[in-house]
Length: 364
Image (cartoon, rainbow, N blue to C red; front, top):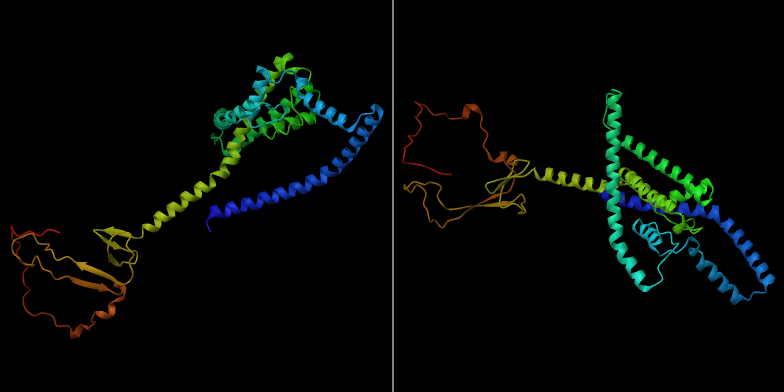
C-alpha cells in the first residue's frame, strides 16, 4: 500500500478518534450544567406566567419578540457600517449569525457573494501570511547578523516561534480592548478573540451588538474590523507554516514514487530497436512489447553492403527466424570445451589481412 493511502487512512482514524474523545469530554463538562440551567429557566418561566397571568400563546409571542429584537440593540444592522461588518463575516467565513438576510434577494446575493469572496479572502490571507513569514525571516537574519551569529538564516522553527508569539500578542491585546468596550471579563474576551480568529464564530459573544455601537462608536467599529483582518493574516501565517507542511507530504511522496519508477525503467536501454536488459539479454522488438525468454528475431533480407558486387543476394524471399530460448549467460553447454593439447593450431606462416579497396564501401 502506498504511503499516501496509509497516511490518508491514518488521518481519518485519528480525526474520528479525536471527535469521539472531544464528544466524551464535552458531554462530561457541559451536560450537567445544561440540565441545571434548563430547570432554572423553566422555574423562572412558571413564576413570570403566574405573576402576569400570561397564556402559553402569548408567552411564545413574547419569546419571539425578544429574540428578534436582540440584533437591533446594536443599531441598524443593514446600513453601510453594519452591512460592511456583515460582509466581513461572510468573506472571512466567521459567520457569527448575529444578523442574517431576511429577503430572498438578500439570501441569493449572499450565496453568490460568498462563492467569489471566500476564495478571494483565502488567497489574500495566504499571501499576507507568506509576506509576514518573509518579513520575519528578514528581521531574524538582520538581528543574527548584528549579533555576529554563525547561522544567520531563519529556520522553520524560528518562524513558527515568531508567528506564535504574534498570534498570542494579537489575541491578548485584542482581549484587553474588547473587555473594556464590551464589559466582558478578560477570559471571555480571550475566548471571543480565539473563536473569531480561528473563524469558528459561534455567535454566543459578538462585538458591536449593544449601546448602538454601529452608529455611535465609529472608532470601535474600525478597531474591530482591523483586528479581524490583521488577526486572520497572522493566523494564516501560522497555518502556512504548520498545516501546509502536512498537506504537501502527499505531493512529495508522489514525486518520489515517480522518480523511483523512472529509475526502474533505467534498467532497460533501447539501441536501434533492440532492448538490452539489466542481465545482458538482447531482445528484439519495439519498446512496450512484452518480451519473454523465448523471443523470435526476424532478420531482414536487405543487404547491408552498398557496393554493386552482389555479395549478398538482394530481393531474397527467404526469412531466417532465430529463437533464443535461454539467456546468453545460460548457453555455455552449447560451446565445446577442449583441452589445450587437443587443439589443432594452424602450422605455417600467418596470412596477411585482406586488402581493402577504396571503392568497396559497407554501411551499417
